[in-house]
Image (cartoon, rainbow, N blue to C red; front, side, top):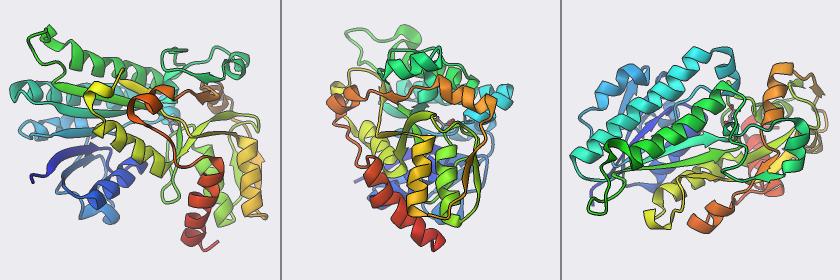
Length: 337
Ligand code: AKB
């Protein structure tokens, strides 16, 4: 059987590392990676080839490649993007557009479908006010699409760009032509938490930062208020959702962008859980106006009914399973805590 040729951009990031380990364990993939940084030792042997550098300039490297699947994970996350808007736009939008164009041209040239997975975000939503956030409840994909951040605007626009390249580019699709040579699919992720890696540049980072600090006995000043709530998900569930959406038969999908949800806790509830596991943890709250503003604009939780019905999505880790069945056992081993 020939191996599935897959490209993973943003390979050194949290999602990238976990995804590459899972693909390598599954087997049957020829994995090409791209990132600004060199690959960490832990995944180096899993990549057949690594393109190091800015995707905008590295894209030429891939002109002659014949990928079956692309996971385009490279991104500048929300807090960083807010501080450096032009860089974020270049990485998040121009990088995505270059890769979409490459995939669209190649799939058209070879008359074969290239599957393209794009991790979008709850940042694509924008709640007008805190009271709207807490009365709206679990938001659906087509509600509140009014992002308040550069990153959120970038993500929402790239969802549209992916739909454009797969559905309308060249206006080539008619009843006679097979639709969607470029098969674009996107997941709007909540905040993700890994027991093995820490995020950087995001705004949901207070969740993982607080828990990793507590496990290491380090003091942590949380940059949002105690009552701040957004949805979160365990990294293994995030990876499972990417693979499930990638593998879902096209005809079962009723849309191209899906919410996925697992559990939604307030920062105060994270602190309580951390203290229960690590009673000496020193966690205080020192909200930053800028980062609190971002969290206030993101929904309290999202409705993932469409992912559940279209491709059988269901998280394995709710809040209890996340702490007791994944995070705490792994983190205790990691930090000897
Ligand atoms: C961020 O905080 O920017 C990301 C996200 C929710 O997309 N983790």
